Length: 245
Image (cartoon, rainbow, N blue to C red; front, side, top):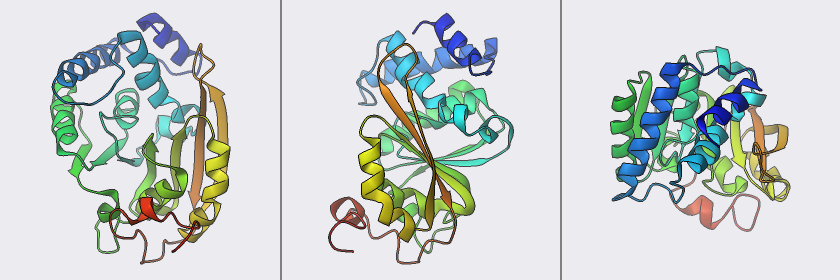
């Protein structure tokens, strides 16, 4: 995906990209590739692939959840890595208030440099485990309009990371590739226990490819019980609804 194809694919979704935003994406790409030479941020480094599989892919939640485009929502991005999906969303929709939590300090250091390089405001960065960040004594518990994650964990595990951070009336948005239907089935019990209810599973192919993508939207319909999330490492070892609880 070249720059013109990137612009055209977004315009097809009624998202206009300004010259300033294109310059921010260009600076993002350059810093990502430069930093990646000594910090492992991504295996995708060719420019057309970065624009398609990182930048464009990160924006796809806004195709289906329209309030991302216009409202000053608070968004928490769990395990954002090199800033996906929240930083591309922030570039295109600067009214968003973004909080990023990641367990690896090297990635947070990169993101601090990135936020400064791009001149973004309304972005907060935290080095923490998701299980601690959304714990019962955390100031961030059930505070966010939207909590999102991309390529972090299976949905049964991801729900325990994200739903405790999602405010009642808010939404968790999970970005998934193939086999999302199986993950949804496995996660059904966990989602309910944690106060969520599946709203939608939007299925599509990444622009110009046959690569399957899913945007899974889960509504937060009731408070998460205080005993969740469990201590760090437990959700991955013992997913809710599968074996011991």
